Image 1: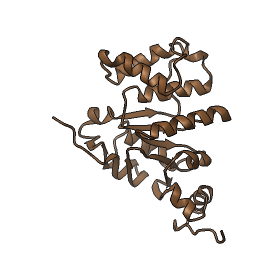
Image 2: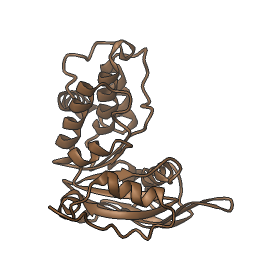
Image 3: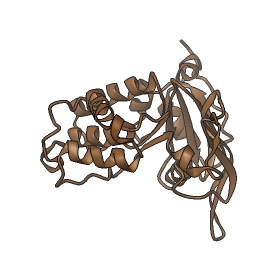
Image 4: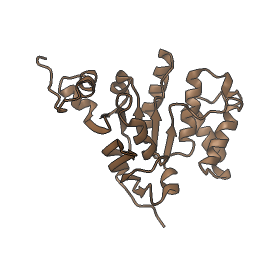
Length: 256
């Protein structure tokens, strides 16, 4: 039976998560199409991590729904999760394994068949600039190359949606630039959600930005739209997250 055809690769509607009497996430709506890179922002405690855990199927929502390529994540979790690649803030790396050993393990966990294992491994390494690192121990690699391995495990099964949580944290400027280039390349053929605290990173890599604050989505616009309003992402972020009484209406700067 063919899977349903969907224009959106990921769609969340009315997503909520409560922990006891505490509402960590409230009525979140999110939609992403193929070829789009979404910057997902929010101060600490805004609910971003909880939201990403729900989007990846690692935490059940208290209310709402998530569809991955038209497949309901709650009804068919195995099928939906097969379309998702996820890099958590702390990549699940095994330092005592070589890059090839680790990626083979990741491929099997993502149910890549033996017939496709070699091609999947080669494609992920080529995409992430790891062609010459296959026999190296992960523990011997630089932080930047370890992040490349983390991204490679997230795309080893050729997912439609890639979710990256703080992929450039702790990297030096050159490593950050290389990872950002990789994210842009991934976004050309997949949907990418980039969660980060680095605002210039979002402006340079993403097509669109959403900001969470106190469990709610308080901003959703394209990077082009921001530029047309003659306001910076930094100004928007500060106005929405520092002023708790803010109405969320962003006024463009005066002048040219």
